[in-house]
Length: 497
Ligand code: N01
Image 1 (spheres, rainbow, N blue to C red):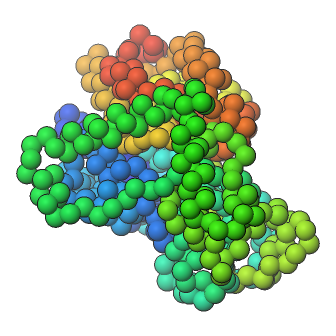
Image 2 (cartoon, helix red, strand yellow):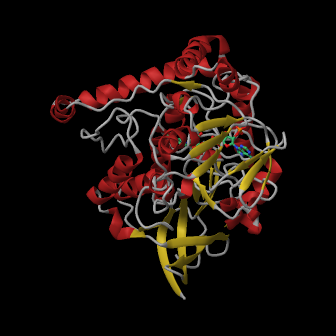
Image 3 (tube, helix red, strand yellow):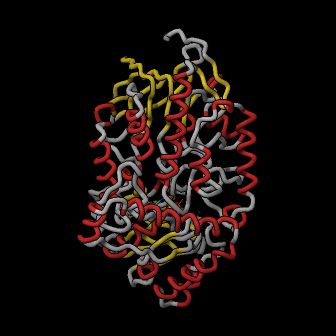
């Protein structure tokens, strides 16, 4: 078994892991390795290849501030273009040379005596170990597909595919297809499948709020301007950013301010669906903003197609060749698409990370809720930074902005602790508790708690532990400097030093 020693191990080569590698290299931290189980960069934008996969944040904002792309072909980008963009950035910064693809991290354990993280890996099927002083988690919250717990699902003899594990080689045309779920993934898949399916059943448990999508291709003159007019892209990014932040401020805490969004969604239903009964079925019953607001011009017209049925009776079981609903009806099907989301607050990854005393992230978060400090450090897990950690998620704007804020904090942590000869850094429990209590105070007044919906934003205790409850520039400010006083630090030498 081979062992590889590095200063910093980054797990994940998506937006956050790649961003970490670039920022480390720019700041002189060259002794790092990036580990990823996939075959190239992109993370969720590599893995989600379902038809229609696209981003619902405008292209110019959904990119790194330090690697803006004047060549976006559309105002909202589709998965292949984002995937190409991420790989292009990785090439530009030469990160591929320090990245091990086909490498699964099966366990990461903090070794107190060594003051190192010991990572058990399988690289192209061969076991090995990576020993690192610092661990950076960039696995993302939307990486572990959630399969619904439906009676008989394992008996289904047809084709079953999760939205995030699409089978591009399978021929879906002319088949009887069922899509379970009506979230952000389903609303992109269904219009594409509706065009080619022999028959399509859409299983809706909760009707989402959907506003029109203002996507359009960029004209060549616009791309010319993005490339040649200094500051234009930055200005556009700023404009989109400011608009998103202003909407979010109203959305989260003042439900009345959301009335225009509700009116827009209702008009979208009215425009897209002719049948009044179907209109009633797709009209949501919870407050706008409680779940992610979706964007589509095609969803409602697709439900109105002759080859498409919306089924709102709950699924009672799945048989070898059909889905059976609570009204006793059997719906024959060749293909089931499970667009049922991800394990976010209960990710199996949490079981593989062992902190002080061998306690896993799952142990700690099952007991105390999914908490951390500034979304990045967690008491009991020294020298470990988690990107897109607790309370950093967003429903309204670009996660890349949040990631870049965390990267500022990470770099300052590395600079300050390295300069001071620190070998062990652990956020203080009291500091983390105060930080969490403050967030929860804010969240209690939010539409995510009070909007009358259930969502993946909530953990098993019903607390919102996924989302950031304020302006994103507040998060940028709070992560600007590494506040070492919030941490227990030690300079005791480790045997390997
Ligand atoms: O998953 P979801 P997603 N029986 O969890 C239903 C990001 N994203 O993959 O609402 C029947 O949102 C569930 O029903 P209900 C984005 O952050 C971004 O669609 O819980 N139904 C729901 O309708 C997004 O929020 C983009 O009642 C079941 C659906 O499955 C996140 O990914 C594009 C069920 C799951 O919706 C996740 O979106 C795509 C069951 N047993 C995704 N279990 C962008 O544009 C679950 N459901 C950037």
